[in-house]
Image (cartoon, rainbow, N blue to C red; front, side, top):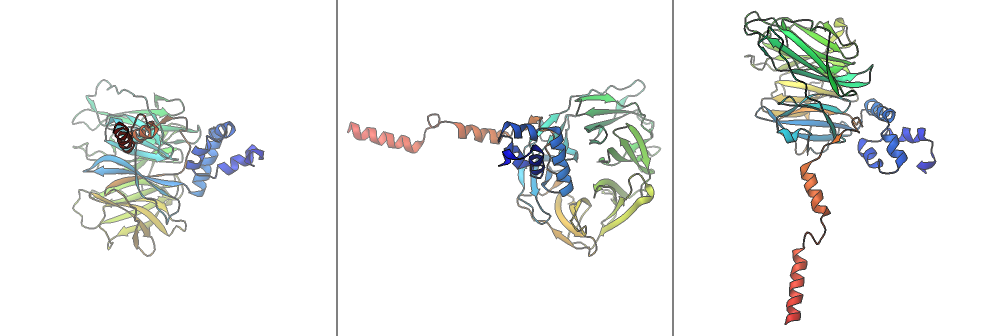
Length: 419
C-alpha cells in the first residue's frame, strides 16, 4: 500500500518514526534506502524529534574514583517511563577507558580521550567520526601551553557541526597569555585557525562549555595577580559565534564570590547560569541558584527561576538541570554528591523531590541528553567486540561446533553396531 503513496506522504510518515524503526526500514527497498539517507529527510526527522521531544535517550558516563570509565544508555519515551540502563560501547574504547563527554547537540555527542583524540558520535545509530589530529606549536616567547579547552556545537547558518579548540600559551610567573583558537568542520573534515583574537588575554576559562543559538559559551574569570591558576577575579560570559567566527562578551546575573562556584547549562532552549558553593570551600549550606537568560544576548533578561536548598531528602553538591516536564512545573536533575549521582524530578513550587528509579544505573555518572537523530548515518560503524563475538558464534555451522549430545548418541550407536 505504501508503494502507491506519493514520496512526499511517505517522507512525512517516516519522519515521525523513531530512529530504531528507520534503521530497519533501510532494508525495505532501494527507494526507501535512498529517501532515509537524503540530507533533507535527516533534517526533517531531526526537526520532528526536537519539536515533539520524543525518542529521547540519556547517555551516562560512568565515573569511578573521579575517572570516566564506561557509558550507559537509558531510553525514556515519556517523562514517567525510563527503560533499564544498559552498557554502551563507545568508539574510542579501544584507546582505553579515560574518555569523557565534552558536549552534545542534536543527538550527537562529542567525546574526548586523554591523548587528545576527539570523536563525534551518534550513540543511537552507533555511528561516529574521529577528528584528524591537529598539532600544537608553541609560539616564540612562550615556554609551555596549558591543557586545551574544547567545545562542540552547531553552526546554524552553514548547517555544519564544529569543534573549537582553545589553547593558552604561557610563561611561568607571568599573567599574560597568548591564545590560539582553531575550529574543526564536520562538513570539510578539517581544522583551520581562527583569525579573530581572544578578547581577554589575562583571563582563564573557568567553566564548562555549552552550545546554543549557533554559538559556544564559557565563563571566563580574571587571573589573580600572583597565581594565574586560581581565577577568582571578575567573571563574565564569553560567546563564540560559529558562523561569523567572532567573540562576544555578556554580563552574568551575579558576580562570582571567592567561595562560590558557577556553571553554564542549557535549559528550555535558553542559557542557564547556576551558582553553588565551591566544592573546596568550607560552606555547610548546600544550594543551587538557577538563572535563565530569557532573551539571548540581553544581560538584562537574566531571571532566577528556582533555588534548590536544604532541607532535601539527599545531600547534594551540584544539580545539573536536564529538562523540564511537559507542564514545566518540574525539572529533571542530575543530582551529584561526592561519589554518587541520582536522577531526580524536582517540583519547583512545592520544592519536593521524587527519585527516578532505573535498574542497572551506575552509582556515579555524568549525563548527556540525546534526541532521536540520523546525523552521521554515513559515518563509521561502532563495533562492539562482545556483540561481534556472539555473532560469530551464532554464524558457526554445526560441523564447526559439534554438539556434545549428538556426539554421545553417535558413539553409543557405533558401540551397539560393533557389539
